[in-house]
Length: 280
Image (cartoon, rainbow, N blue to C red; front, side):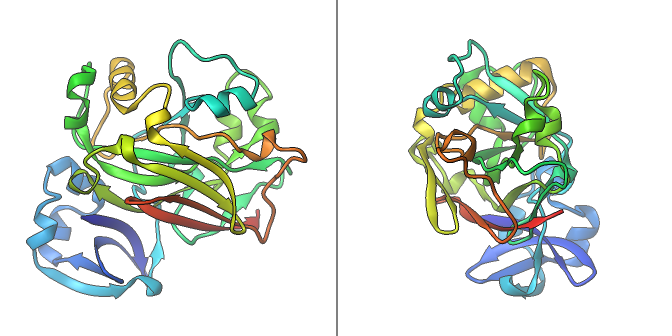
Protein backbone atom coordinates (compact mmCIF):
# COMPACT_ATOMS: atom_id res chain seq x y z
CA UNK A 1 0.00 0.00 0.00
CA UNK A 2 1.18 3.51 -0.85
CA UNK A 3 0.00 6.56 1.10
CA UNK A 4 0.58 10.25 0.47
CA UNK A 5 -0.09 13.61 2.12
CA UNK A 6 -1.31 16.39 -0.16
CA UNK A 7 -3.27 19.59 -0.59
CA UNK A 8 -6.43 19.43 -2.67
CA UNK A 9 -7.38 23.06 -3.14
CA UNK A 10 -7.56 24.52 0.36
CA UNK A 11 -7.82 21.13 2.05
CA UNK A 12 -4.80 19.39 3.58
CA UNK A 13 -5.49 15.68 3.51
CA UNK A 14 -4.06 12.23 2.74
CA UNK A 15 -4.96 9.14 0.81
CA UNK A 16 -4.10 5.77 -0.66
CA UNK A 17 -2.55 5.60 -4.13
CA UNK A 18 -4.48 3.43 -6.60
CA UNK A 19 -3.02 3.68 -10.08
CA UNK A 20 -3.08 7.38 -10.93
CA UNK A 21 -5.70 8.18 -8.28
CA UNK A 22 -5.45 9.15 -4.63
CA UNK A 23 -8.32 7.80 -2.54
CA UNK A 24 -9.14 10.07 0.38
CA UNK A 25 -10.69 8.23 3.36
CA UNK A 26 -14.19 9.04 4.60
CA UNK A 27 -15.02 12.10 6.68
CA UNK A 28 -15.53 10.14 9.91
CA UNK A 29 -12.14 8.44 9.55
CA UNK A 30 -10.38 11.75 8.86
CA UNK A 31 -12.13 13.42 11.79
CA UNK A 32 -10.66 10.77 14.07
CA UNK A 33 -7.28 10.59 12.31
CA UNK A 34 -6.64 14.01 10.74
CA UNK A 35 -3.24 13.18 9.17
CA UNK A 36 -0.95 10.30 8.34
CA UNK A 37 0.96 10.66 11.58
CA UNK A 38 -2.29 10.08 13.50
CA UNK A 39 -3.12 7.05 11.32
CA UNK A 40 0.30 5.52 11.97
CA UNK A 41 0.15 6.27 15.71
CA UNK A 42 -3.23 4.57 16.00
CA UNK A 43 -1.99 1.48 14.14
CA UNK A 44 -4.84 1.65 11.61
CA UNK A 45 -2.94 1.81 8.32
CA UNK A 46 -4.58 -1.43 7.21
CA UNK A 47 -8.05 0.11 7.65
CA UNK A 48 -7.30 2.47 4.75
CA UNK A 49 -7.40 -0.50 2.35
CA UNK A 50 -11.03 -1.36 2.99
CA UNK A 51 -12.53 1.80 4.46
CA UNK A 52 -14.95 4.28 2.91
CA UNK A 53 -13.57 6.54 0.19
CA UNK A 54 -14.69 10.17 0.39
CA UNK A 55 -13.07 11.65 -2.70
CA UNK A 56 -10.91 10.48 -5.58
CA UNK A 57 -8.17 12.82 -6.78
CA UNK A 58 -6.07 12.49 -9.90
CA UNK A 59 -2.40 12.61 -8.83
CA UNK A 60 -1.76 15.40 -11.33
CA UNK A 61 -4.39 17.61 -9.70
CA UNK A 62 -2.97 17.72 -6.16
CA UNK A 63 -0.08 19.49 -4.46
CA UNK A 64 2.06 16.91 -2.71
CA UNK A 65 3.20 17.68 0.83
CA UNK A 66 6.19 16.19 2.59
CA UNK A 67 5.08 12.65 3.36
CA UNK A 68 4.91 13.44 7.10
CA UNK A 69 4.22 17.20 7.35
CA UNK A 70 4.42 17.15 11.16
CA UNK A 71 6.86 14.52 12.43
CA UNK A 72 8.17 14.81 15.95
CA UNK A 73 11.68 14.07 14.68
CA UNK A 74 13.59 13.79 11.41
CA UNK A 75 16.88 12.04 12.17
CA UNK A 76 19.45 11.92 9.38
CA UNK A 77 22.51 9.71 9.17
CA UNK A 78 25.68 10.96 7.53
CA UNK A 79 28.70 9.01 6.33
CA UNK A 80 26.84 5.71 5.97
CA UNK A 81 27.95 4.48 2.52
CA UNK A 82 31.64 3.70 2.14
CA UNK A 83 32.06 5.46 -1.28
CA UNK A 84 30.55 8.66 0.15
CA UNK A 85 32.78 8.45 3.23
CA UNK A 86 35.84 8.11 1.01
CA UNK A 87 34.91 10.91 -1.41
CA UNK A 88 34.38 13.32 1.52
CA UNK A 89 37.77 12.41 3.02
CA UNK A 90 36.35 10.93 6.23
CA UNK A 91 37.17 7.86 8.27
CA UNK A 92 34.71 5.00 8.74
CA UNK A 93 32.83 6.09 11.90
CA UNK A 94 32.62 3.91 14.99
CA UNK A 95 29.02 5.03 15.58
CA UNK A 96 26.31 6.45 13.32
CA UNK A 97 26.73 10.14 12.51
CA UNK A 98 23.30 11.52 13.41
CA UNK A 99 21.97 15.03 12.84
CA UNK A 100 18.47 16.50 12.70
CA UNK A 101 16.35 18.21 10.09
CA UNK A 102 13.39 20.40 10.98
CA UNK A 103 10.04 19.78 9.25
CA UNK A 104 10.16 23.22 7.61
CA UNK A 105 13.34 22.24 5.77
CA UNK A 106 11.32 19.71 3.74
CA UNK A 107 8.90 20.01 0.85
CA UNK A 108 6.85 17.54 -1.16
CA UNK A 109 7.08 15.67 -4.45
CA UNK A 110 7.10 17.96 -7.51
CA UNK A 111 7.36 21.07 -5.32
CA UNK A 112 10.37 23.38 -5.74
CA UNK A 113 13.32 22.93 -3.44
CA UNK A 114 15.03 26.24 -2.74
CA UNK A 115 18.66 27.16 -3.19
CA UNK A 116 19.17 29.67 -0.35
CA UNK A 117 20.22 33.26 -0.93
CA UNK A 118 23.10 32.73 1.52
CA UNK A 119 25.06 30.24 -0.61
CA UNK A 120 25.82 28.92 -4.08
CA UNK A 121 27.09 25.58 -2.71
CA UNK A 122 23.78 23.72 -2.72
CA UNK A 123 24.28 19.96 -3.00
CA UNK A 124 22.11 16.86 -3.46
CA UNK A 125 21.93 13.65 -1.42
CA UNK A 126 19.43 10.95 -2.38
CA UNK A 127 18.45 8.58 0.42
CA UNK A 128 16.07 5.91 1.64
CA UNK A 129 14.04 7.01 4.66
CA UNK A 130 12.43 4.76 7.27
CA UNK A 131 9.13 5.73 8.93
CA UNK A 132 8.62 4.61 12.54
CA UNK A 133 5.34 2.85 13.35
CA UNK A 134 5.10 2.90 17.16
CA UNK A 135 6.91 4.25 20.23
CA UNK A 136 10.38 2.77 20.40
CA UNK A 137 12.94 2.90 23.20
CA UNK A 138 15.93 0.59 23.73
CA UNK A 139 14.96 -1.57 20.75
CA UNK A 140 17.37 -4.46 20.06
CA UNK A 141 18.32 -4.84 16.42
CA UNK A 142 16.61 -8.24 16.35
CA UNK A 143 13.24 -6.53 16.89
CA UNK A 144 13.86 -3.38 14.82
CA UNK A 145 11.59 -4.13 11.86
CA UNK A 146 8.62 -4.48 14.22
CA UNK A 147 8.85 -0.68 14.58
CA UNK A 148 8.85 0.19 10.87
CA UNK A 149 5.67 1.47 9.19
CA UNK A 150 7.28 1.77 5.77
CA UNK A 151 9.72 3.59 3.54
CA UNK A 152 10.00 6.61 1.25
CA UNK A 153 12.49 8.53 -0.85
CA UNK A 154 14.38 11.42 0.74
CA UNK A 155 16.45 14.26 -0.72
CA UNK A 156 18.80 15.68 1.90
CA UNK A 157 19.66 19.00 0.28
CA UNK A 158 22.93 20.24 1.79
CA UNK A 159 24.32 23.77 1.87
CA UNK A 160 27.95 22.72 2.04
CA UNK A 161 29.68 25.90 3.20
CA UNK A 162 27.18 26.36 6.02
CA UNK A 163 27.47 22.68 6.88
CA UNK A 164 31.21 23.19 7.39
CA UNK A 165 31.08 26.37 9.47
CA UNK A 166 31.57 24.21 12.57
CA UNK A 167 31.68 20.52 13.46
CA UNK A 168 27.88 20.58 13.77
CA UNK A 169 25.89 19.96 10.54
CA UNK A 170 22.65 21.64 11.63
CA UNK A 171 22.83 25.00 9.78
CA UNK A 172 23.76 23.46 6.43
CA UNK A 173 20.94 20.92 6.61
CA UNK A 174 18.02 23.11 7.63
CA UNK A 175 17.53 25.95 5.18
CA UNK A 176 13.86 26.49 4.34
CA UNK A 177 12.54 23.90 1.86
CA UNK A 178 16.04 22.75 0.95
CA UNK A 179 15.09 19.06 1.02
CA UNK A 180 12.16 16.83 0.15
CA UNK A 181 10.44 13.63 1.25
CA UNK A 182 7.96 11.40 -0.58
CA UNK A 183 6.20 10.93 -2.89
CA UNK A 184 4.49 8.34 -0.66
CA UNK A 185 4.96 5.90 2.16
CA UNK A 186 5.30 2.32 0.93
CA UNK A 187 4.22 -0.11 3.64
CA UNK A 188 6.40 -2.99 4.76
CA UNK A 189 4.28 -5.64 3.07
CA UNK A 190 5.50 -4.24 -0.27
CA UNK A 191 9.16 -3.98 0.83
CA UNK A 192 9.85 -7.25 2.57
CA UNK A 193 13.65 -6.95 2.25
CA UNK A 194 14.95 -3.35 2.20
CA UNK A 195 18.52 -4.59 1.73
CA UNK A 196 17.51 -5.61 -1.81
CA UNK A 197 16.67 -2.00 -2.71
CA UNK A 198 18.84 0.16 -4.95
CA UNK A 199 18.96 3.94 -5.20
CA UNK A 200 19.80 6.42 -7.93
CA UNK A 201 19.95 10.23 -7.88
CA UNK A 202 19.71 12.14 -11.16
CA UNK A 203 20.19 15.81 -11.96
CA UNK A 204 18.60 16.88 -15.25
CA UNK A 205 18.40 13.21 -16.21
CA UNK A 206 22.10 12.48 -15.58
CA UNK A 207 22.84 9.80 -13.00
CA UNK A 208 24.94 11.28 -10.19
CA UNK A 209 24.57 8.71 -7.43
CA UNK A 210 23.97 4.98 -7.36
CA UNK A 211 23.98 2.68 -4.37
CA UNK A 212 22.50 -0.40 -2.74
CA UNK A 213 20.90 -0.39 0.70
CA UNK A 214 22.81 -3.61 1.37
CA UNK A 215 26.00 -1.50 1.40
CA UNK A 216 25.05 0.68 4.38
CA UNK A 217 27.79 0.79 7.01
CA UNK A 218 25.09 0.88 9.70
CA UNK A 219 22.02 -0.99 8.48
CA UNK A 220 18.42 -0.18 9.34
CA UNK A 221 18.25 -2.39 12.46
CA UNK A 222 21.49 -0.86 13.75
CA UNK A 223 20.14 2.67 13.22
CA UNK A 224 16.86 1.92 15.02
CA UNK A 225 18.74 0.29 17.88
CA UNK A 226 21.14 3.25 18.18
CA UNK A 227 18.59 6.04 17.82
CA UNK A 228 16.07 4.43 20.17
CA UNK A 229 18.77 4.27 22.82
CA UNK A 230 19.31 8.04 23.01
CA UNK A 231 15.73 9.17 22.26
CA UNK A 232 12.20 7.82 22.29
CA UNK A 233 11.20 7.28 18.67
CA UNK A 234 7.55 8.13 18.04
CA UNK A 235 5.06 7.09 15.34
CA UNK A 236 5.73 9.08 12.18
CA UNK A 237 9.34 9.84 13.06
CA UNK A 238 11.72 9.67 10.09
CA UNK A 239 15.20 8.16 9.91
CA UNK A 240 17.04 9.04 6.68
CA UNK A 241 19.64 6.33 6.28
CA UNK A 242 22.45 8.11 4.40
CA UNK A 243 23.57 8.81 0.84
CA UNK A 244 25.77 6.93 -1.66
CA UNK A 245 28.82 8.40 -3.33
CA UNK A 246 28.62 10.90 -6.19
CA UNK A 247 27.56 14.11 -4.43
CA UNK A 248 28.22 17.42 -6.15
CA UNK A 249 30.84 18.56 -3.64
CA UNK A 250 33.07 15.58 -4.48
CA UNK A 251 33.01 16.08 -8.26
CA UNK A 252 35.55 17.82 -10.49
CA UNK A 253 34.31 20.35 -11.31
CA UNK A 254 31.87 20.74 -8.42
CA UNK A 255 28.24 20.20 -9.36
CA UNK A 256 26.09 22.56 -7.33
CA UNK A 257 22.33 22.71 -7.80
CA UNK A 258 20.99 25.86 -9.42
CA UNK A 259 17.62 27.30 -10.36
CA UNK A 260 16.11 25.41 -13.30
CA UNK A 261 17.67 22.06 -12.39
CA UNK A 262 15.52 19.00 -11.77
CA UNK A 263 16.55 16.54 -9.06
CA UNK A 264 15.21 12.96 -9.00
CA UNK A 265 15.66 10.32 -6.32
CA UNK A 266 14.50 6.90 -7.47
CA UNK A 267 14.27 3.73 -5.41
CA UNK A 268 12.57 0.99 -7.47
CA UNK A 269 9.81 -0.55 -5.41
CA UNK A 270 9.54 2.57 -3.26
CA UNK A 271 9.08 5.55 -5.56
CA UNK A 272 10.42 8.35 -7.70
CA UNK A 273 10.77 11.69 -5.90
CA UNK A 274 11.04 14.63 -8.31
CA UNK A 275 11.74 18.28 -7.46
CA UNK A 276 12.59 21.32 -9.57
CA UNK A 277 15.16 23.69 -8.09
CA UNK A 278 14.36 27.38 -7.59
CA UNK A 279 16.19 30.28 -6.01
CA UNK A 280 14.95 31.44 -2.63
